[in-house]
Image (cartoon, rainbow, N blue to C red):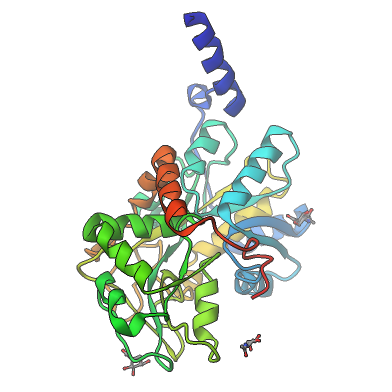
Length: 360
Ligand SMILES: *[C@@H]1O[C@H](CO)[C@@H](O)[C@H](O)[C@H]1NC(C)=O
Ligand SMILES: *[C@@H]1O[C@H](CO)[C@@H](O)[C@H](O)[C@H]1NC(C)=O
Ligand SMILES: *[C@@H]1O[C@H](CO)[C@@H](O)[C@H](O)[C@H]1NC(C)=O
Protein backbone atom coordinates (compact mmCIF):
# COMPACT_ATOMS: atom_id res chain seq x y z
CA UNK A 1 0.00 0.00 0.00
CA UNK A 2 2.69 2.46 1.04
CA UNK A 3 4.88 1.70 -1.93
CA UNK A 4 1.84 2.09 -4.21
CA UNK A 5 1.13 5.54 -2.74
CA UNK A 6 4.79 6.41 -3.10
CA UNK A 7 4.88 5.33 -6.75
CA UNK A 8 1.71 7.26 -7.47
CA UNK A 9 3.12 10.40 -5.83
CA UNK A 10 6.38 9.99 -7.72
CA UNK A 11 4.50 9.61 -10.99
CA UNK A 12 2.47 12.77 -10.34
CA UNK A 13 5.54 14.80 -9.41
CA UNK A 14 7.41 13.42 -12.41
CA UNK A 15 4.68 14.69 -14.67
CA UNK A 16 4.98 18.32 -13.56
CA UNK A 17 8.74 18.69 -13.06
CA UNK A 18 11.68 16.66 -14.20
CA UNK A 19 13.59 17.69 -11.08
CA UNK A 20 13.37 20.25 -8.31
CA UNK A 21 15.44 23.09 -9.68
CA UNK A 22 15.92 24.83 -6.31
CA UNK A 23 18.85 22.57 -5.41
CA UNK A 24 20.89 23.63 -8.38
CA UNK A 25 21.61 26.80 -6.36
CA UNK A 26 22.08 28.87 -9.48
CA UNK A 27 19.17 31.30 -9.32
CA UNK A 28 20.98 34.66 -9.44
CA UNK A 29 19.36 36.87 -12.08
CA UNK A 30 21.00 38.50 -15.06
CA UNK A 31 20.76 42.21 -14.19
CA UNK A 32 20.36 44.40 -17.26
CA UNK A 33 23.10 47.02 -17.58
CA UNK A 34 22.79 47.80 -21.31
CA UNK A 35 20.96 50.83 -22.64
CA UNK A 36 17.61 50.14 -24.28
CA UNK A 37 19.13 50.99 -27.69
CA UNK A 38 21.85 48.38 -27.17
CA UNK A 39 19.18 45.81 -26.36
CA UNK A 40 17.35 46.92 -29.52
CA UNK A 41 20.45 46.18 -31.60
CA UNK A 42 20.84 42.75 -29.98
CA UNK A 43 17.16 41.97 -30.68
CA UNK A 44 17.55 42.99 -34.33
CA UNK A 45 20.64 40.79 -34.69
CA UNK A 46 18.63 37.90 -33.27
CA UNK A 47 15.96 38.25 -35.99
CA UNK A 48 13.85 41.25 -34.98
CA UNK A 49 10.89 39.24 -33.64
CA UNK A 50 9.40 38.66 -30.20
CA UNK A 51 6.48 36.30 -29.66
CA UNK A 52 4.37 37.23 -26.66
CA UNK A 53 1.30 35.47 -25.32
CA UNK A 54 -0.80 37.98 -23.41
CA UNK A 55 -3.82 37.28 -21.22
CA UNK A 56 -7.04 39.06 -22.20
CA UNK A 57 -10.39 38.65 -23.88
CA UNK A 58 -10.30 40.48 -27.20
CA UNK A 59 -7.90 39.76 -30.08
CA UNK A 60 -7.18 43.48 -30.52
CA UNK A 61 -6.75 44.26 -26.81
CA UNK A 62 -2.96 44.67 -27.05
CA UNK A 63 -2.81 46.38 -30.45
CA UNK A 64 -1.77 49.57 -28.65
CA UNK A 65 1.23 47.80 -27.10
CA UNK A 66 2.22 46.33 -30.48
CA UNK A 67 1.98 49.71 -32.18
CA UNK A 68 3.90 51.57 -29.47
CA UNK A 69 6.65 48.93 -29.38
CA UNK A 70 7.10 48.71 -33.14
CA UNK A 71 7.12 52.52 -33.50
CA UNK A 72 9.72 52.90 -30.77
CA UNK A 73 11.96 50.09 -32.12
CA UNK A 74 12.17 50.17 -35.95
CA UNK A 75 12.74 46.75 -37.50
CA UNK A 76 11.10 44.89 -34.62
CA UNK A 77 7.90 42.83 -34.89
CA UNK A 78 5.85 42.18 -31.78
CA UNK A 79 4.10 38.92 -32.59
CA UNK A 80 1.45 39.14 -29.89
CA UNK A 81 -1.47 36.77 -29.29
CA UNK A 82 -4.22 37.64 -26.81
CA UNK A 83 -6.25 34.83 -25.31
CA UNK A 84 -7.69 33.92 -21.93
CA UNK A 85 -4.77 33.29 -19.55
CA UNK A 86 -6.34 29.97 -18.55
CA UNK A 87 -6.02 28.78 -22.16
CA UNK A 88 -2.57 30.26 -22.80
CA UNK A 89 -1.03 28.58 -19.75
CA UNK A 90 -1.98 25.02 -20.66
CA UNK A 91 -0.64 25.54 -24.17
CA UNK A 92 2.64 26.82 -22.69
CA UNK A 93 2.71 23.67 -20.55
CA UNK A 94 2.28 21.57 -23.68
CA UNK A 95 5.10 23.37 -25.47
CA UNK A 96 7.35 22.86 -22.45
CA UNK A 97 6.40 19.19 -22.10
CA UNK A 98 7.00 18.43 -25.78
CA UNK A 99 10.17 20.49 -26.11
CA UNK A 100 8.55 22.64 -28.80
CA UNK A 101 8.64 26.08 -27.17
CA UNK A 102 8.21 28.98 -29.56
CA UNK A 103 6.80 31.62 -27.17
CA UNK A 104 9.32 34.10 -25.73
CA UNK A 105 7.29 36.19 -23.28
CA UNK A 106 4.19 35.38 -21.22
CA UNK A 107 2.05 38.08 -19.56
CA UNK A 108 -0.84 36.43 -17.73
CA UNK A 109 -3.51 36.69 -15.03
CA UNK A 110 -2.80 33.13 -13.80
CA UNK A 111 -0.29 34.32 -11.17
CA UNK A 112 0.00 30.83 -9.65
CA UNK A 113 1.59 29.42 -12.82
CA UNK A 114 4.76 31.46 -12.44
CA UNK A 115 6.25 29.98 -9.23
CA UNK A 116 5.44 26.52 -10.63
CA UNK A 117 7.10 27.24 -13.98
CA UNK A 118 10.08 28.65 -12.12
CA UNK A 119 10.44 25.53 -10.00
CA UNK A 120 10.31 23.49 -13.19
CA UNK A 121 13.27 25.54 -14.40
CA UNK A 122 11.26 27.10 -17.25
CA UNK A 123 11.82 30.81 -16.52
CA UNK A 124 14.75 33.09 -17.25
CA UNK A 125 15.93 34.99 -14.17
CA UNK A 126 16.33 38.42 -15.65
CA UNK A 127 15.94 41.85 -14.05
CA UNK A 128 15.04 44.50 -16.63
CA UNK A 129 15.92 48.14 -16.07
CA UNK A 130 13.63 49.58 -13.39
CA UNK A 131 13.19 46.18 -11.71
CA UNK A 132 14.16 47.57 -8.28
CA UNK A 133 11.64 50.41 -8.71
CA UNK A 134 8.74 47.93 -8.81
CA UNK A 135 6.70 47.47 -5.64
CA UNK A 136 8.54 44.67 -3.77
CA UNK A 137 5.35 42.61 -3.53
CA UNK A 138 5.03 42.68 -7.31
CA UNK A 139 8.39 41.04 -8.07
CA UNK A 140 10.10 37.73 -7.51
CA UNK A 141 13.29 38.11 -5.49
CA UNK A 142 15.27 36.31 -8.25
CA UNK A 143 13.52 38.18 -11.08
CA UNK A 144 11.91 35.05 -12.51
CA UNK A 145 8.69 37.09 -12.90
CA UNK A 146 7.27 40.50 -12.02
CA UNK A 147 4.13 42.58 -12.38
CA UNK A 148 3.99 44.58 -15.60
CA UNK A 149 0.69 46.50 -15.13
CA UNK A 150 -1.97 46.78 -12.44
CA UNK A 151 -5.31 45.41 -13.62
CA UNK A 152 -8.60 45.56 -11.71
CA UNK A 153 -12.38 45.89 -11.90
CA UNK A 154 -14.11 49.21 -11.20
CA UNK A 155 -17.73 50.32 -11.24
CA UNK A 156 -18.50 51.50 -14.81
CA UNK A 157 -21.63 53.37 -15.88
CA UNK A 158 -22.61 54.88 -19.22
CA UNK A 159 -23.85 58.26 -18.00
CA UNK A 160 -25.75 58.87 -21.28
CA UNK A 161 -27.93 55.85 -20.56
CA UNK A 162 -28.24 55.92 -16.78
CA UNK A 163 -28.04 58.76 -14.28
CA UNK A 164 -26.52 56.80 -11.41
CA UNK A 165 -23.32 56.91 -9.41
CA UNK A 166 -22.86 53.59 -7.57
CA UNK A 167 -20.68 53.97 -4.48
CA UNK A 168 -20.85 50.47 -2.97
CA UNK A 169 -21.83 46.97 -4.20
CA UNK A 170 -25.30 47.09 -2.57
CA UNK A 171 -26.09 50.12 -4.78
CA UNK A 172 -26.37 47.74 -7.77
CA UNK A 173 -29.42 46.22 -6.07
CA UNK A 174 -31.39 49.49 -6.39
CA UNK A 175 -34.36 49.60 -8.80
CA UNK A 176 -32.57 51.84 -11.33
CA UNK A 177 -30.17 48.99 -12.16
CA UNK A 178 -32.92 46.46 -12.93
CA UNK A 179 -32.33 45.00 -16.45
CA UNK A 180 -29.36 47.38 -16.85
CA UNK A 181 -26.45 45.29 -15.57
CA UNK A 182 -24.09 43.27 -17.77
CA UNK A 183 -21.66 41.02 -15.92
CA UNK A 184 -18.99 38.46 -16.77
CA UNK A 185 -19.69 34.89 -15.63
CA UNK A 186 -17.76 34.41 -12.37
CA UNK A 187 -17.41 30.74 -13.30
CA UNK A 188 -15.54 31.67 -16.51
CA UNK A 189 -12.90 34.13 -15.23
CA UNK A 190 -11.06 33.67 -11.95
CA UNK A 191 -10.53 37.41 -11.38
CA UNK A 192 -14.30 37.94 -11.67
CA UNK A 193 -14.84 34.93 -9.41
CA UNK A 194 -12.60 36.64 -6.86
CA UNK A 195 -14.76 39.79 -7.08
CA UNK A 196 -17.89 37.78 -6.23
CA UNK A 197 -16.01 36.01 -3.44
CA UNK A 198 -14.95 39.33 -1.87
CA UNK A 199 -18.42 40.89 -2.25
CA UNK A 200 -20.31 37.93 -0.83
CA UNK A 201 -17.89 37.36 2.08
CA UNK A 202 -18.79 40.93 3.04
CA UNK A 203 -22.47 41.26 2.12
CA UNK A 204 -23.61 37.66 2.33
CA UNK A 205 -25.44 35.27 0.01
CA UNK A 206 -28.54 37.49 0.13
CA UNK A 207 -26.69 40.10 -1.91
CA UNK A 208 -26.30 37.57 -4.74
CA UNK A 209 -29.96 36.52 -4.59
CA UNK A 210 -30.99 40.17 -4.88
CA UNK A 211 -28.52 40.62 -7.75
CA UNK A 212 -30.15 37.74 -9.67
CA UNK A 213 -33.52 39.47 -9.15
CA UNK A 214 -32.06 42.46 -11.05
CA UNK A 215 -31.94 40.23 -14.16
CA UNK A 216 -28.31 40.92 -15.10
CA UNK A 217 -27.08 39.80 -18.51
CA UNK A 218 -24.23 37.29 -18.13
CA UNK A 219 -21.53 37.34 -20.81
CA UNK A 220 -18.14 35.78 -21.55
CA UNK A 221 -15.06 37.99 -21.41
CA UNK A 222 -14.45 41.06 -19.28
CA UNK A 223 -14.30 43.38 -22.30
CA UNK A 224 -17.80 42.38 -23.46
CA UNK A 225 -19.67 44.36 -20.76
CA UNK A 226 -17.87 47.56 -21.79
CA UNK A 227 -18.63 46.94 -25.47
CA UNK A 228 -22.32 46.49 -24.70
CA UNK A 229 -22.53 49.42 -22.27
CA UNK A 230 -20.82 51.73 -24.75
CA UNK A 231 -23.23 50.77 -27.56
CA UNK A 232 -26.11 53.32 -27.59
CA UNK A 233 -28.86 51.08 -28.99
CA UNK A 234 -29.44 48.83 -25.95
CA UNK A 235 -30.41 49.43 -22.33
CA UNK A 236 -27.36 47.79 -20.73
CA UNK A 237 -25.70 50.57 -18.74
CA UNK A 238 -23.46 49.36 -15.91
CA UNK A 239 -21.00 46.69 -14.78
CA UNK A 240 -18.52 45.92 -12.01
CA UNK A 241 -16.58 43.12 -13.78
CA UNK A 242 -14.56 45.17 -16.29
CA UNK A 243 -11.83 47.74 -16.65
CA UNK A 244 -11.65 50.92 -18.73
CA UNK A 245 -8.79 52.64 -16.91
CA UNK A 246 -9.18 55.27 -14.23
CA UNK A 247 -9.86 58.20 -16.57
CA UNK A 248 -12.23 56.81 -19.21
CA UNK A 249 -13.63 58.83 -22.11
CA UNK A 250 -17.18 60.20 -21.78
CA UNK A 251 -19.88 58.99 -21.49
CA UNK A 252 -18.30 56.26 -19.34
CA UNK A 253 -17.91 57.08 -15.63
CA UNK A 254 -16.00 54.96 -13.17
CA UNK A 255 -15.93 54.77 -9.40
CA UNK A 256 -14.49 52.50 -6.72
CA UNK A 257 -16.00 51.49 -3.40
CA UNK A 258 -14.63 52.54 -0.01
CA UNK A 259 -16.54 50.12 2.24
CA UNK A 260 -16.58 47.11 -0.08
CA UNK A 261 -13.46 45.39 -1.42
CA UNK A 262 -12.63 45.46 -5.12
CA UNK A 263 -10.20 43.36 -7.15
CA UNK A 264 -6.80 44.56 -8.37
CA UNK A 265 -3.71 42.54 -9.24
CA UNK A 266 -0.34 42.95 -10.94
CA UNK A 267 -0.60 41.17 -14.30
CA UNK A 268 2.50 38.99 -14.27
CA UNK A 269 5.18 38.71 -16.92
CA UNK A 270 8.13 36.37 -17.45
CA UNK A 271 10.59 35.35 -20.14
CA UNK A 272 10.81 31.63 -20.89
CA UNK A 273 14.35 30.35 -20.37
CA UNK A 274 14.49 28.42 -23.64
CA UNK A 275 12.75 31.16 -25.62
CA UNK A 276 13.87 31.39 -29.26
CA UNK A 277 14.12 35.20 -29.03
CA UNK A 278 15.46 36.10 -25.57
CA UNK A 279 16.80 39.50 -26.66
CA UNK A 280 13.45 40.42 -28.22
CA UNK A 281 11.70 39.41 -25.03
CA UNK A 282 14.14 41.45 -22.93
CA UNK A 283 13.53 44.48 -25.14
CA UNK A 284 9.77 44.11 -24.72
CA UNK A 285 9.95 43.79 -20.93
CA UNK A 286 12.35 46.73 -20.58
CA UNK A 287 10.03 48.83 -22.73
CA UNK A 288 6.89 47.91 -20.78
CA UNK A 289 8.52 48.83 -17.48
CA UNK A 290 9.78 52.26 -18.60
CA UNK A 291 8.27 55.17 -16.71
CA UNK A 292 6.88 56.59 -19.96
CA UNK A 293 5.03 53.42 -20.89
CA UNK A 294 3.74 52.94 -17.34
CA UNK A 295 2.41 56.53 -17.30
CA UNK A 296 0.47 55.88 -20.50
CA UNK A 297 -1.40 52.84 -19.17
CA UNK A 298 -4.19 54.93 -17.61
CA UNK A 299 -4.20 52.87 -14.43
CA UNK A 300 -2.05 52.38 -11.37
CA UNK A 301 1.56 51.51 -12.13
CA UNK A 302 3.61 48.58 -10.89
CA UNK A 303 6.43 51.11 -10.35
CA UNK A 304 6.68 52.94 -7.04
CA UNK A 305 7.95 56.07 -8.80
CA UNK A 306 5.00 56.50 -11.20
CA UNK A 307 2.14 58.32 -9.44
CA UNK A 308 -1.46 57.14 -9.65
CA UNK A 309 -3.74 59.01 -12.09
CA UNK A 310 -5.07 62.30 -10.71
CA UNK A 311 -7.69 61.88 -8.01
CA UNK A 312 -6.55 58.40 -6.94
CA UNK A 313 -4.33 57.33 -4.05
CA UNK A 314 -1.35 55.04 -4.62
CA UNK A 315 -2.37 51.43 -5.23
CA UNK A 316 -0.78 50.40 -1.90
CA UNK A 317 -2.70 53.09 0.03
CA UNK A 318 -6.27 52.23 -0.97
CA UNK A 319 -7.99 50.48 1.94
CA UNK A 320 -10.64 48.88 -0.32
CA UNK A 321 -8.24 46.76 -2.38
CA UNK A 322 -5.15 44.63 -1.84
CA UNK A 323 -3.38 43.85 -5.12
CA UNK A 324 -1.09 41.27 -3.52
CA UNK A 325 -3.97 39.07 -2.28
CA UNK A 326 -5.03 37.84 -5.71
CA UNK A 327 -2.11 35.41 -5.90
CA UNK A 328 -3.23 33.71 -2.69
CA UNK A 329 -6.77 33.35 -4.05
CA UNK A 330 -5.47 31.94 -7.34
CA UNK A 331 -3.07 29.55 -5.60
CA UNK A 332 -5.83 27.60 -3.84
CA UNK A 333 -7.09 25.78 -6.92
CA UNK A 334 -9.34 23.42 -4.95
CA UNK A 335 -11.20 26.37 -3.37
CA UNK A 336 -11.41 28.16 -6.74
CA UNK A 337 -12.91 25.03 -8.31
CA UNK A 338 -15.53 24.68 -5.56
CA UNK A 339 -16.52 28.34 -5.91
CA UNK A 340 -16.83 28.03 -9.71
CA UNK A 341 -19.16 25.05 -9.36
CA UNK A 342 -21.25 27.01 -6.83
CA UNK A 343 -21.87 29.75 -9.39
CA UNK A 344 -22.29 27.30 -12.25
CA UNK A 345 -25.15 25.73 -10.30
CA UNK A 346 -26.82 29.15 -9.82
CA UNK A 347 -26.38 30.76 -13.27
CA UNK A 348 -25.41 27.86 -15.54
CA UNK A 349 -22.29 27.18 -17.56
CA UNK A 350 -20.85 30.13 -19.48
CA UNK A 351 -22.78 30.36 -22.74
CA UNK A 352 -21.25 31.17 -26.11
CA UNK A 353 -17.90 30.59 -27.69
CA UNK A 354 -14.73 32.02 -26.21
CA UNK A 355 -15.12 35.82 -26.28
CA UNK A 356 -12.23 35.88 -28.74
CA UNK A 357 -14.34 34.23 -31.41
CA UNK A 358 -17.78 35.30 -30.23
CA UNK A 359 -19.52 37.63 -32.63
CA UNK A 360 -21.39 40.22 -30.57
C1 LIG B 1 3.98 34.28 -34.12
O1 LIG B 1 3.05 33.72 -33.19
C2 LIG B 1 2.30 32.64 -33.71
C3 LIG B 1 1.22 32.28 -32.70
O2 LIG B 1 1.71 32.30 -31.39
C4 LIG B 1 3.24 31.50 -34.05
O3 LIG B 1 2.52 30.42 -34.60
C5 LIG B 1 4.31 31.97 -35.04
O4 LIG B 1 5.26 30.96 -35.24
C6 LIG B 1 5.00 33.23 -34.53
N1 LIG B 1 5.87 33.78 -35.57
C7 LIG B 1 7.18 33.94 -35.43
C8 LIG B 1 7.88 34.60 -36.57
O5 LIG B 1 7.80 33.59 -34.45
C1 LIG C 1 -19.73 61.45 -15.14
O1 LIG C 1 -18.52 62.11 -15.45
C2 LIG C 1 -18.69 63.44 -15.88
C3 LIG C 1 -17.32 63.98 -16.20
O2 LIG C 1 -16.67 63.15 -17.14
C4 LIG C 1 -19.36 64.28 -14.80
O3 LIG C 1 -19.60 65.55 -15.30
C5 LIG C 1 -20.67 63.62 -14.40
O4 LIG C 1 -21.23 64.30 -13.32
C6 LIG C 1 -20.46 62.17 -14.03
N1 LIG C 1 -21.75 61.56 -13.76
C7 LIG C 1 -22.03 60.97 -12.62
C8 LIG C 1 -23.41 60.39 -12.52
O5 LIG C 1 -21.24 60.88 -11.71
C1 LIG D 1 -26.78 47.95 -32.30
O1 LIG D 1 -25.56 48.48 -32.79
C2 LIG D 1 -24.60 47.51 -33.09
C3 LIG D 1 -23.26 48.21 -33.39
O2 LIG D 1 -23.47 49.36 -34.14
C4 LIG D 1 -25.10 46.66 -34.24
O3 LIG D 1 -24.17 45.67 -34.57
C5 LIG D 1 -26.41 46.00 -33.82
O4 LIG D 1 -26.96 45.29 -34.89
C6 LIG D 1 -27.42 47.03 -33.33
N1 LIG D 1 -28.55 46.33 -32.73
C7 LIG D 1 -29.82 46.73 -32.91
C8 LIG D 1 -30.86 45.91 -32.19
O5 LIG D 1 -30.11 47.68 -33.60
